[in-house]
Length: 154
Image (cartoon, rainbow, N blue to C red; front, side, top):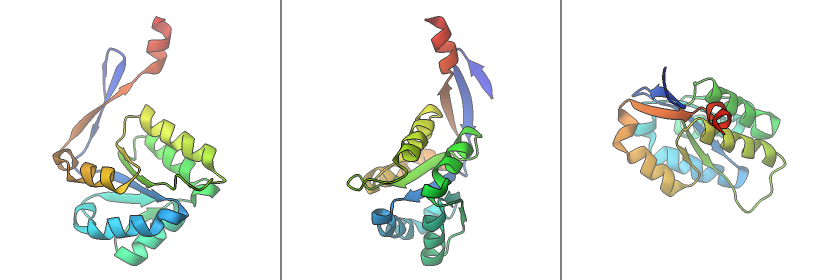
């Protein structure tokens, strides 16, 4: 890692670590999307929250490392892996019309993803655009803002 002013440079490798997450009403949508993109996704390392990861593995036959279910801490486990630099990219098909018992965890996960400058897709169109980007198959330098330095300057 290299420090550049108030940024930290973190290089994503060619082979990305991708988190796959979906709320209950969107799981089938995510499985369909993964199935359509199986060849591209198969070139990367996949993980996901419990039920979603297991469903994708069973339906699409891609290895997806399963963390806990979202409401049982899986969102927080994914967030922790983002902070540790073990997840580069997130596809999260969330349900905007159904209140979730773990909404604070979801908000925290999205906040961490933004803080650590990882690409996030929350719907099929964005996921399609991200996956079709040439950057998916080459190294990419993320600039992670060091907010503590910015706060001290004020």
